Every structure is written in C-alpha cells, then in structure tokens.
Amino acid sequence: MLLMRKQGKSYRDISSEISKSTRKKFPLSWVFNILKRENTIPPNEEIIRKNICNLEVQPNICDV
Image (cartoon, rainbow, N blue to C red; front, top):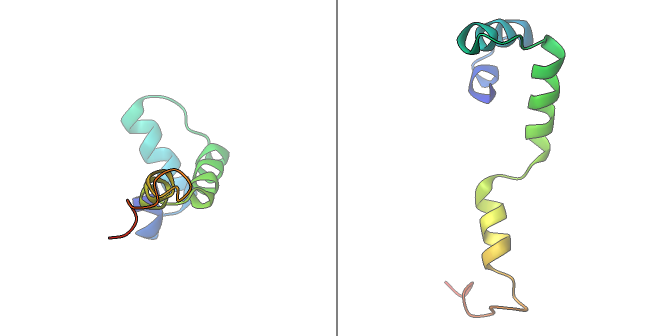
C-alpha cells in the first residue's frame, strides 16, 4: 500500500487493487487508516537500533 501511494495512486485505486488481489473487501477508509498508522510508526531500523542500543544495558554495542 505504501509503495502504491508513493507512486501517486489514490486511496480508491489502492482499495480496489487490494480488494481484487486478496478477494476481501478493503474499504477506502481502511486503506486511509492503515497508511496513516504506518506513517506514525518509526522505520524498522530505528526500532532495531533502539532495542539493541539500550545504553543502560549494553553500553559498548553502540560504539561502532
């Protein structure tokens, strides 16, 4: 969905494509809410760095 949105597709186009490919109804509002939620989640790299680089627990692991 994110890739389609970055390509300039509308929420309606994304909704219809996902509905066709999954054979399940994906309303326009679901697509909008899913993409909105995904934009508030930090990228995986940030999550991994945060989990690995907990300075209180493992101070030397971040000294790269």
